[in-house]
Image (cartoon, rainbow, N blue to C red; front, side, top):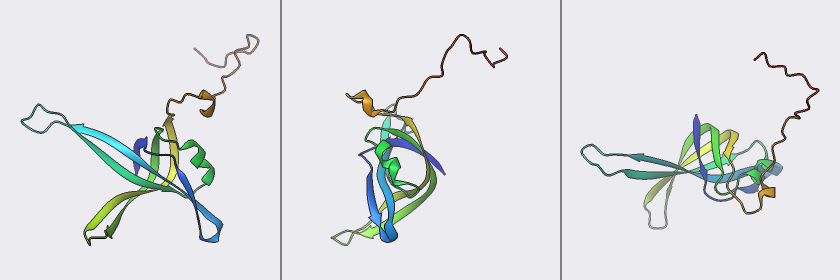
Length: 129
């Protein structure tokens, strides 16, 4: 399954048994629709708790406001709260993360720089057009 959304708070790395680590974060997916017979636009936000087991170093890039595309499988966490009311939350077991947009920051040094290809005039252009 593939979903995309904006990270709601900085990712947290947790140690689990056997020295394994998991990166936990949450995303918000914004959507809107216009009910039949109404001119009013309804906005809905769906929050999904995500876990990533493939490497804890990814947590350093998963900051609040980052837009990500996630690949994996969805799940449901059902539980009873202190008052005995049944509640549930969506979970996403992430197998691959693609960062689409980094958040705007005051310190641009935090955002990884993309190296540009050298435009040396002596290098021939391999493109046929």
